[in-house]
Image 1 (cartoon, rainbow, N blue to C red):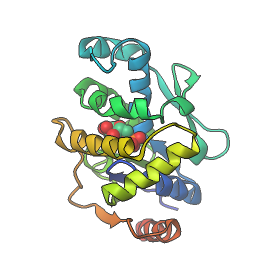
Image 2 (image 1 turned 90 degrees about the vertical axis):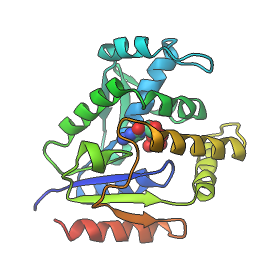
Image 3 (image 1 turned 180 degrees about the vertical axis):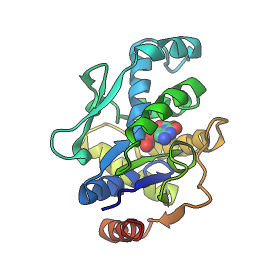
Image 4 (image 1 turned 135 degrees about the horizontal axis):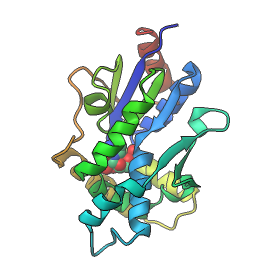
Amino acid sequence: MKKITIAIDGYSSTGKSTVAKQLADHLGYVYVDSGAMYRAVTLYAMQHDIISKNHFDTLKLKQSLGSIDLKFKKEYVWSKAHIFLNEQDVEDKIRNLEVSEFVSPIATIHEVRKKLVAQQQQMGLEKGVVMDGRDIGTVVFPNAELKIFMNASAQERAQRRYKELLERSENIQFDEVLKNIQERDHIDTTRQDSPLVKAADAIEIDNSEMNLEDQFHTVLQLAKDRI
Ligand code: C5P
């Protein structure tokens, strides 16, 4: 069967990764969470005194890029793959609110994007890949056979994210989560290098009122139409 490239972009916490993982497992495709790569670089920057509340040493970040090695490793299915930063499994360390606060500034840096985009393109060379992020349909795979742009209201997205963080037993307030989502949306859509925009040929799905099953079947049908 023909293999295609599926690009899923959209605002923070729109459920991109949920549908991307379902799709990848169903089709037997590789799943790549590009946001995890920006998050892992951010974790590295936090651990190496490159970024904190009061400072951001962009020069040191650029000089450190050669020392940052990222890999996805899976045991059974791609939807359960973990990201490794310099051979260390950091999957559980990159989803907290602290990393979320610094990741968008880190993702504005051209050299960071250049490195990660090159690796993402490499991972998609053989097609049969579902990748989610902010610039997948516009920059990473402009020729993807299927491009989805996911959206939902900021309130709804913050609710979902808040629930997720509570389940991970993070001690947080809803307003903090909403503020973080709004700030990331703002930085992601207004940055100079590859801002988040809907690709001209992307299909927009607003899932504010959709359940996961309907969403999955809608996207799966779009994929099947192209295979
Ligand atoms: O997808 P996730 O919310 O984990 O992404 C975290 C952040 O990484 C985004 O808010 C954005 O700043 C950055 N990102 C990006 N380009 C991508 C994926 C993520 O700039 N392709």
